Image 1 (cartoon, rainbow, N blue to C red):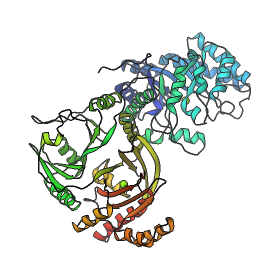
Image 2 (image 1 turned 60 degrees about the vertical axis):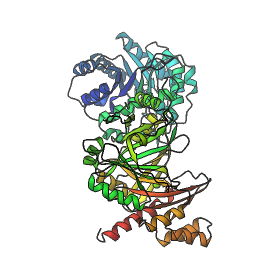
Image 3 (image 1 turned 45 degrees about the horizontal axis):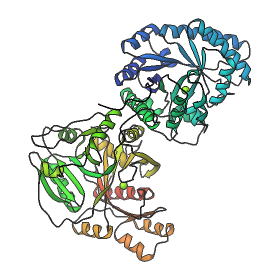
Image 4 (image 1 turned 90 degrees about the horizontal axis):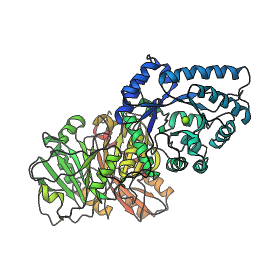
Length: 627
Ligand code: MG
Ligand code: MG
């Protein structure tokens, strides 16, 4: 792939073993296979593994990795005697381990002990002594300010101590989490002499209001998965001339539980993303989107017939048949839904694993080739579907759950993909101004950050505010990924409970999947009246909802009656209004939402989610009263 070379030699990539699950050997294997250059050996991973340091050194070498650092060495500096002397002995023992491992750098994090003396000169003298002993063995010491250190919490304090110690084998270690969690500025890092920064650790985190130690131990995540200004932090560190590794140090409950290969991919992807964001690595720009070209459902013959009749009740018409495959097109306005029942296809494989469900999305982009280059750079290589003779090859990448994401660019020939591959049935009556408004996904527990990073890095979508939505049987956390112009909207929903709407979708589909598709119409009252006339199964909203609506918004009695008669939900933000209604589920797997956005309303009606979820439960109970 031809790409402009980065203006500087790329920093090596590294990941702390604590950020990957499994045994130490599993962690090394996962880091090597995805392509990391180095690993930080987290001491506890070594202590709990049955292998000797020499064996680990050999394994690291055989995998083509390096050990970038040994960490952490805790509670060392500024202790009263006799602890001071014991700490120096302790350091010598760790130097033995480092030499057996074949690494030359140790991370000393600022002391958290109550006994630590608040005296920079003492800290500097102790660290200089440790550095002197390290230097005798050809080793180095890096000093990192922990955000919850007893006397040293900020990088500027740690730097002052390193400067005062004035030993060439002692340098500074910076960690984005410890700096940004305190709201501290990273700007001054750009002014440091880069060779005095011995190591750089990167972590992001969601904005939470809690004590910084718990925040750090449980909620750090990979750059791009959280809310901290990690790209500008990186830019400042690299502006100093720092040429060492960019290393990831994540402590996170979900990452601890995720398979190591998934976290390793997220980790390397996060470095690709953050270096591009920081402007230090040249990457193709993410696509500019122009909506959704089609949504493809994997079905078999029986499910195809059932889904086709459901779609007809929703106003879709059979608009075409594939020239050579068991693939049918249903269309309404600009919304194209494809039902794929082709044997020997990725769709069939998807159907066999997940049942009737969305197996592919096709997004209209400004430049499909650039979108593929971008995806490849973000560790999502191009995926090519098997095609028949004369059929159009549409480039695609795969989402973390395997769903295909097709990239449809403008075609210079002026022919649509439908004209090439389908026999289209003419129909002049389709004047519905219908569009895809949003496509909501249900994700398995623990995978929100994985999907956020995929859509953010590969496609440049931005995460919106996180909502917590009460379902009758548990909590659902929801966060939408949005394109820059706001036209591509993908809400991601996750639930720890198996009994919530989201949990049941995960069970029904054996994994992640699309749980609703929202269609935007210009006149929702007319659309719903016509759907009702066609027998569409729409959810009934309880009367109490409208009483409360009258209290929340100043709506006239006529307006309320009109909303209630149409079973419409209502919301409003600073910009405008949102009217929406829901269908019953298709085989309890997915459903459709009909929406109308008025004057640039930006949300998804989150305030109405509990009402919708209770109405869905009532609808299920009406069918099975003993549920
Ligand atoms: Mg750290
Ligand atoms: Mg929705």
